Image 1 (cartoon, helix red, strand yellow):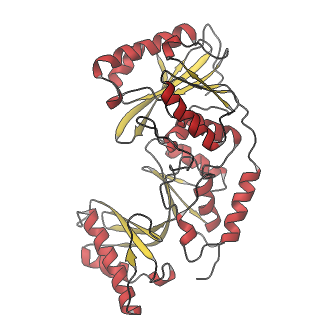
Image 2 (image 1 turned 180 degrees about the vertical axis):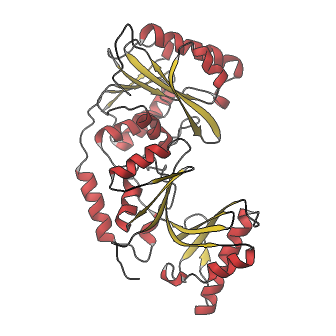
Image 3 (image 1 turned 90 degrees about the horizontal axis):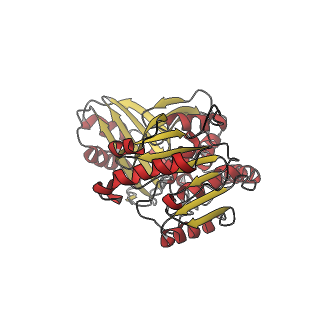
Length: 388
């Protein structure tokens, strides 16, 4: 296939609920014009260079999809025919593998699995008729992952340029209990308005995801720096020279972490997991870890920002959670004056036990759990907050 990276096409970048505006700002930052906010996604017209950059640089991106066809479908037979009419040999060799994911909303085709099966059959049948052979299906690590989105009668056919979800950064060596998604952690930090220079503390740091993402942000390290594979590297029109130039230019801008970053946790074992993950990312010397329960802690400096994911949901017994949240409120009010605190929780009733007035409340999802991401201003007197 001829490479022409000046051509533009529809690109859809998936993200998490509540992070759409953050992602749009990131995309504008890499040169995207007029991004359109969707539900859990942002869409724009872009080039192959911008598709590569979105994968490598955007911290709140989950997947980057290139739309290759769009049409209306009124039944499963029309879906089969129109998918079969796509020139799949431009995108995939018969000796390579494919996988199909489908999402169906308000359509006469009611089952996404069945839609995916019809699409796979159409692609395979076209190859068989043209070559006498058929590509194999590999649902785990295919050479080409195809995404079908049917909304009513509108069908978008895309190819997934990311491969594995982009939240899999590649630095995590040890899983903590109920680990936070890297994309959600980065989004929380960015929503807080942290400038990458002011002191940052996670007093319940677990395996260190917030700490690691904070260091990556402060240093300007690309989100995809540690990833070994992206889906587009297996595409027929992959431009290795362009890809290397994008990585080289971005990596050249990495600077030392310019903020003091701190992590507390009451569990020494959990803190060791954070150390291992920070070490894998090269930030073990930039983060000060301390084995201490939050109720016994004191702020490491006069002012800064707290971003944390305290226990909730399945991580703590319901009878204890109100006491935990009351303790957090008491400690913040008594000891952390001069700081600003952001915390995420799925337990809105326990949140009332904090006993502090929230100055901002944002709805986010941690996996399937609907959460509130809340901000507390801990400034005394008439001192104004430094952050938005």
